[in-house]
Picture 1 (cartoon, rainbow, N blue to C red):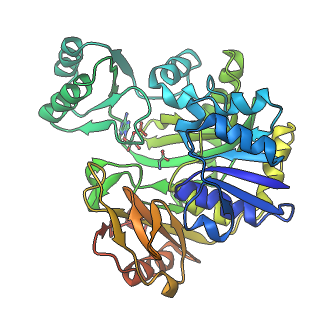
Picture 2: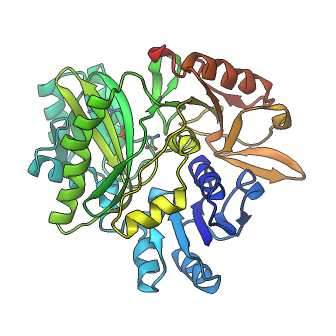
Length: 410
Ligand code: AMP
Ligand code: GLY
């Protein structure tokens, strides 16, 4: 098989890595890819937003299977474009990708089908939003509608924070805001292979969304992750499948938006059971970096089978994988580029490149989140020690990271 992976981050590096372990794959392309992926795939210089260019490339090269990483590419209708050309692609159509691109769309379906989630209201004007927040009080969650790479969300514990978030959201013309009940509990991610109403769960991971230790600071795309998660027992996973993931896949079919691809459940284990924080239309990042290396079953087989409406028994490595994200100073508000990264050759862990580039023969930072350093071990504690030992081996004076990934579950 010839496989094309679309994207340039850590998630896509993990997808390429999983594809490279498939016995059936003879050639992998990544578009546009990154220096980490270049060791496993041929990187082709086509932007992940260039739907036309990607379609033409896949046709020309007779790609057998394309896997899409980023939500933005899905929202541009890459799957629709590929399907129109008869090309096989694993991902949701533009219409089905609304499960992530529009919080309002997802919330309406959840409400209609009784899928547990935080209560909410959507606002298109500032005065009403302010009135609602003043009436509800804190804690409360303010979300900008649309794709925000995990950054358009404020969990406000003070009224001022909530009002500031509303102010910022409505400073962008045409913006809409979803205001939600704040869920309290233990957060986890459950990602499933989905084709219409067929839903095949992967192992659970826990992401760490806040920028700094102790879950302080602004929300990010994710600063560290581990899998599996002891606290999320098989019973809880079954509850999540039966109350959230399967009903959502079925609802998408019934509502005329059948979903194919990775359906990501962002979930909270609360005192009143599992509740949905959000759905994403693609794999998680950094979740992919710790879940996929644990998958022992041939990744391409699983995808091909589910697209043919048949399930595969998934086999997992029992070890714990823990990943620490190294991000550029200033992330998520801003980020620097071009700082030299050294000593990666002396690292034992898997290092997934999230935002790197090559410049004059050196590896340099090239975005907000830069590297995800992932170690596997028999226990979470050991995986923590191994991953951080390697984080400390990597030299770059413009990166920061959290020191407490996995600590809450130890
Ligand atoms: P989202 O982009 O919806 O995943 O939100 C980003 C992060 O904000 C989530 O991973 C949670 O940590 C937090 N969050 C979002 N919505 C809620 C909520 N209703 N209650 C508590 N935390 C939330
Ligand atoms: N790590 C969270 C996400 O991919 O949305």
